[in-house]
Image (spheres, rainbow, N blue to C red):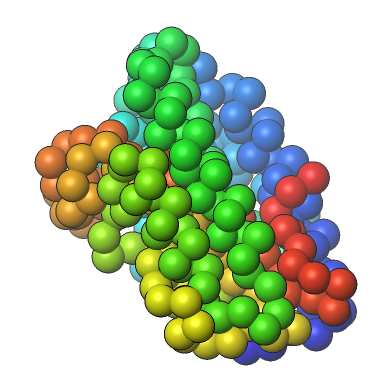
Length: 246
């Protein structure tokens, strides 16, 4: 569904608020802190910014913040787990503001992590950046996915299978699906007013996935390290705009 300039302006405001919230959460994500503490902080900051959490209660998800650790790719439920040096943590947060959602994710090292962990985080950031650069009016979603796919393949890591980005607006998940793979020139042509989330996910191992026992979290089947980065982007008359940044 295409968004008007006024609707994108609301999402821009909400996205900046979400980016500020995420920066505050990242500061507190250190060894010795529980992921449940980070979730409670997220809820307080969301309320302070005048919004509501997008994820709490969505498809029965019990928390506001997704905290996915090491082999967990997405939808990790906050708990009493205490973060320790060497962990790699993905924070994924949705923010509902004035009738519209925005969504973003970052992966951060906790304390001292391995060189491989730092490298996969760096390559995931690059994959997102290249996908955003390709997401411009007149290109296709296949162009975006192909660029992300080729970067991941060249990095030596695996593209996580079966997960993707999505449209966003009045609903947290809307059409279209935004795949992290594709063929150039194929798929939906991007046009002004489109707003969607690009979220490359990389794995050190095979990229095959399976659900956790809680039925919410999704992990790598081979228990290998995984990472994710995500931004909400809009196609505007002035070009592509990342809404979830300060």
